[in-house]
Image (tube, rainbow, N blue to C red):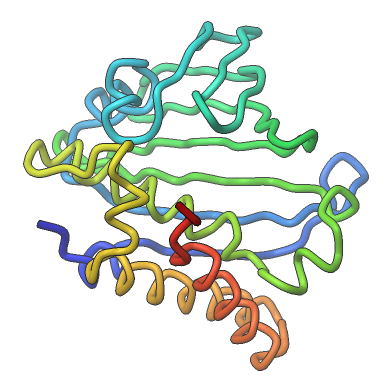
Length: 219
């Protein structure tokens, strides 16, 4: 059902640290080209009914100034929302979870009538992420979860077999899921090394992240 190798290879990942609004900020990006028109991709990432099918159920007002809540996960405030026009679209929102605040942004670029580049950016201020947490898990802590989201979006846009959000945890412990998690962790380690990280530390963080994502909960 899921070609993990093809999906993971379709994603371009980046990790860097930049000064944004006067704060040292870690910037993670994921980009993938989908064989779908921009209007369809936009609908998939902004329509609550579509979001629930490939990501998580969401409540609230998905408009500028509106508050949203992903059931059982993050919530926040929509800060920007520009529907498709001239082959481009974008939105940005706060990502509030566990008492912390970071930011997510999505940009869409139409390549032609039937192909769209989807780029997700996740910004987190260095001072807001405990150093020991970053040292232990690196960018894979959030990156693997976003890889899962891009997989879900790909399946939704394809219109064929999908992994229901409620079944995602079980799938992650399957053979396909384990292969996906391992390769995603390794891909984020490679992105971290490309940003100048020590390869041994990046590999250790990837192993810790893999263990986190693939350990079955007790009971």
